[in-house]
Image (cartoon, rainbow, N blue to C red; front, side, top):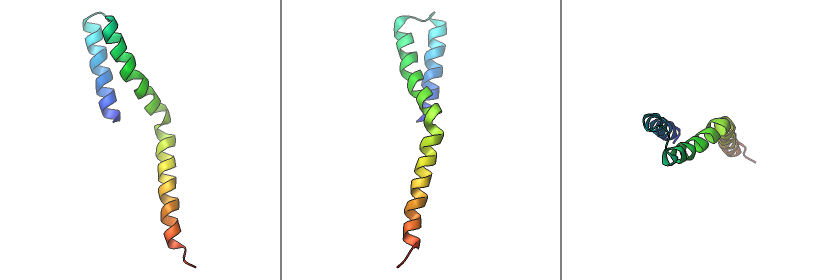
Length: 65
């Protein structure tokens, strides 16, 4: 998902530079740039939360009454 957003942002930016940033290209840049920024900002915390949940779930199986 992250690689697709990075590629889409790069393509949009390249086309925008070539065409001197028409409105449609700017919308494409914003549409791919915002989700990319959000993913980059919150990727670590989301990944850490998923890893911790997986660890806690596996830990339940180890405890036996």
